[in-house]
Length: 348
Image (tube, rainbow, N blue to C red; front, side):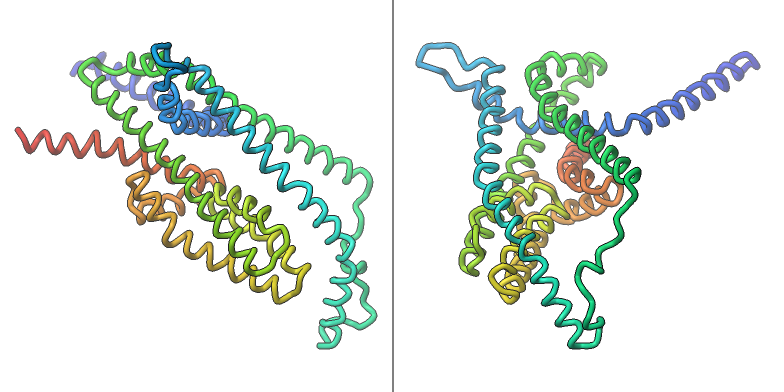
């Protein structure tokens, strides 16, 4: 190798290294945007099998199939109707119960303080209002309110993006698929096409598994709270079903209103609700999630648990939500790229 060739190799290596570092830095700066795009892409891929199933139907015999845009729009309409139904059933009784709880809170707090005073843990003259922290200065309050408004606007914008972007991704899925295949060598396009189709099946199965888990948890929560005697048990069942869609913290958040409503009946009822919710989550985490996801997605329980641990550690709540479909995608790629390569080598 001549000095000129060596210099070109060194220059190319340095250039590629700098480009890689810059790419990583840029990706880190726009990580929220990339995460939003990834979530939108997963939703689009997960809904793709349902869209194709609707497209196969015919409006009337001998007529054309349902247009793709109409199939996608029908899914969105069904989703919005379901959300509206949940809100209509959930919000009014919950608002009333929260109002009633706020009115009864001084009584509950005074009972708690009397209980603690009898055991010498607090002074008997202590009032529950003295336990509240001091009020902030007006400037700090305004700053906190402004920051909260900004956070709400940011979350709302990301939510709208996640809901709207999959519509266009599904609508243009054929052209997007062909566009990305254009970057693959002709001899590898068949494999790339198999990978994308397998990923579509896996992610669609994951979405179906999540809906199945939500239905099971919602039904068992409704039945259990009804047997325990908690008011608004059907509303709490809907809340539990929605909370099941959020791994790790979702079931915990969903159990809070159930325990509070149980407390309005009696402290013993609240403890029974807490124990029932805990037992339900033990069964869900150790039996339902691994079994259902293994059957639906084809990922082993060990892989699911490890993926949940890694995802929640790296990206928190969002990482836990995306852990299972990401593990399924990685499994498809590994099987296609490495396992099939080894099988082809053995055949030779």
